[in-house]
Image 1 (tube, helix red, strand yellow):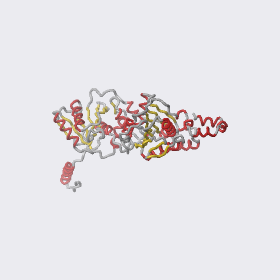
Image 2 (cartoon, one colour):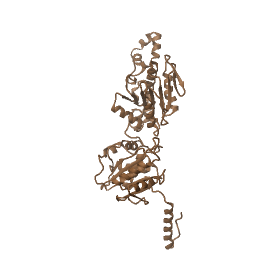
Image 3 (tube, helix red, strand yellow):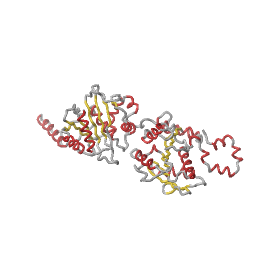
Image 4 (cartoon, helix red, strand yellow):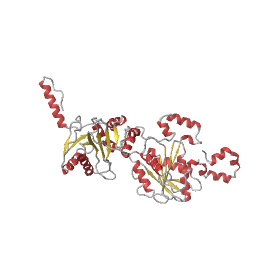
Length: 471
């Protein structure tokens, strides 16, 4: 579809030519008339309105035009702009607003944001930080390029800026293309599914914009290669269930999901990726519980959350009192601290802990009164560690017990090479690989290595061969 002005220019160009000069000038300063119907943001009491489309659809211009209308009408007086970075606020949002402003209420760049002639100022914020609003109160927020927000901060930044949008009309608009699975985009779509009138979403493709030239469309289609996932995302605006480089596919998880743990598992083991504290700003503690049945299938549950050492140690002891043999603990960042805390809580519960130093030794069956502890040091990349568990899932040997939304999100959005640390995923990998008989890495014990080398050298000396080992 096309706008009123463009339709008139196409169907009856003579009519435009006969209009009085002042009326033609008014059309030039009424950009709303140049929007296609699907570009127009409706009035009403909705909470959010978003454009999830292919490139070149016209989403940025649509929001900029509506932004001006709201400022002129006095609907908003405390707006905010947020983009992936402060620079992108200026390059995208400020530029679009300044270029589309009219003489009726012009605007100019101001302190990173925009200031209109009537005194309204739109503050600039960046999704690079977890608290971009800094305690402010807004009545309208424009979020742009969500697909490019940093994976490590985007969810907290979204929560913070939308919570700050709480006065006046308290509405926010957003625009983005798609690239892989994005937790903020997923949340926005889930909100739309639950309450489509309150959380509106407009979908579209590059081909919807009649103002794009044929040569531009042909070049873009060739750039992204028709039939590829990138073409579907960038040109058609499609959203996929997992990130392009994710090791897991949502279809695997859904296909092999079960409703309950096995009634008589051969063994149950916990995986623990500890954190330093339970502060709101701290990382989550990853705790996974995995069961293996007689046929070699592994079943996983997620017990993760934001908690301190005392709480995760209590969970480990509780689950081992119930049916788990023990726990696999990552000690990369906290050394023996996690094992020490677990040991204290075990003693308080009348249990003992036993360290499993041999990484090649299978995890022993449950022994009432004992918590077996295997410590691992992750020398290899997360991708290398997680690949065996992903292979189990692809083969149908790894099952989720119920819907584990946050774990599944980490599985399907974490991409190798990103800085974000997927704590739930790590814990699940430790437990699943343990029961899948996949060795990760045990911590080195220098004294034990020296003793082993001495024993080997002694054996070599007995048979008259030279020493070959030395530490």
